[in-house]
Length: 248
Length: 248
Image 1: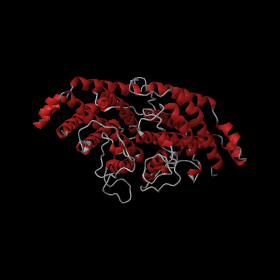
Image 2: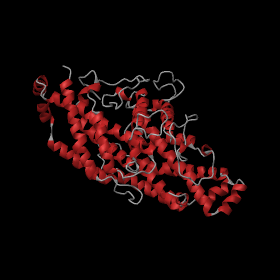
Image 3: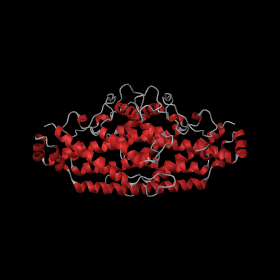
Image 4: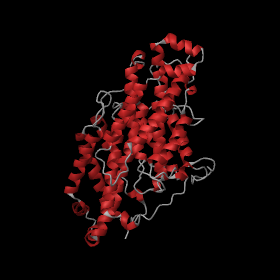
């Protein structure tokens, strides 16, 4: 794909749309287990020599350390939740991205994602504990990664694409450090509503044939709220961040 | 859950049924990428100091080393593909399983699973390369784990449950080391056909609302074949292995 295609707004929208299935499927996997709140508590991990981390945080760190070796964080939209990660042990060659940013980690909203996710869990999982702590954190991390990919991909590429559509207006606001103006300018309410409607339809359709005696069901309402309160606003926050830090 | 419930054949069947969605969803994630054959070739991993492993094998090993720390392989149905794995760094307490086997790794058909999976890939993924090598092996490993869980869970618990239903007939065949007799006795053709039919329906239903311009579609026929040629036969192979090694 050329840089021009990369930054075509319809191509970017397709990629964002295709990530919806991934997020929904991973949420469905997670809700087969209870909330299992000890996994989120520091000192309850059961891990040797890890009194200062929850099992959840330990899993994020171990997963990201492994993924870093394989080169995950060389990809612009893959931003890590952990502060320090090892360098890649593979040579990664990426096609030109068309982005104007040297230090991609300036656009990293993972801590916001993590906070929002922790409030989502009790809304989608059955309360209590089932003992499947290892499986629960495993799926937590896959969801965080899928959500972070969606949000950062949008933040970077949607913002760059919109900038190229109206360089003069955006440049003026960037020069004036006008965050609110930028937010207003890049917001497309009708697109947001279309995304939310489509996500809700997918949540229902994907689970249409599920045996409800065996499987817990993901309610479309909670996913709608998560998109409305977290995915979309954090993508826009990332877009504004990108624009304010865009290198000329 | 008590040991008795654990070994109730309808409870076991429910668990196996519930793992179908997981396998299907993970296959759908993988086929969004091309075959990317270099990931399966030794010497093409691009990894420093890893000339003797493919990227696929490296990813399996790294994933399992991490999972082992978190205690995955303390669970009977979670059998590793790698030969040597570190011991768990968490204390894992499992409820009594009702299984009669000390060394669970006697029932490990992972190498058969891996071989079968490698022949599945060119049948479900578009040919060629798209450069997404890291994502492809990541999803490969999640599929292998889900398939192995399904097969080993069936091998262990279905076999123990069937044994308890007819202890005398099974004991005689075990004493005679009559593998073929055991295979005949535990085979339920009508159950196998029902599973295959249900899996095909799920593959269609899960993808009903998918935008075919953006997403690659998993064909039910290939999943039917994979169940018919791999998942079901390897589960039965594991059941026979379990019975032959069952401790009195």
